[in-house]
Length: 153
Image 1 (cartoon, one colour):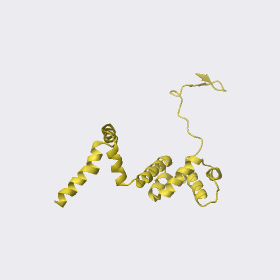
Image 2: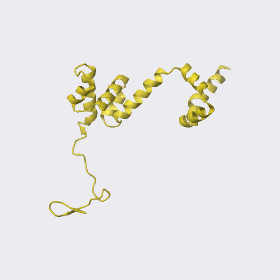
Image 3: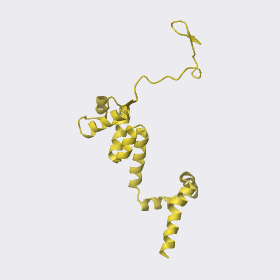
Image 4: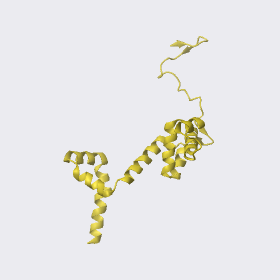
């Protein structure tokens, strides 16, 4: 136990002390403040009102990582996702990561994916099956093909 300036005891362990709240408001008018700042910085950069990401981030009180993530979300074009971020229901960095994965997946053609599969070793194929999940592969890839082939015959 440590003594406060006025002599009363204060717990020094995190397990015994009350949880401290952030001194900064995280929401303003029902919107996550950090996300609003990041989207503002992204708009400044995309509209060429700020010459660099650093300048855009500084001008709106955000940081480069958040502004870059907001740019990714804006370019992805999902208004519903944008709204979820602003209300705090979806973290900005998560949304940006998912948008980047979608963009990357769009660039891979089916032919490239099949060629890649065929070049894998048996061990890599097993690792893929475990990673994607057997039920997902069955439900989303194998079962629909069987259904189509039965309908065609």
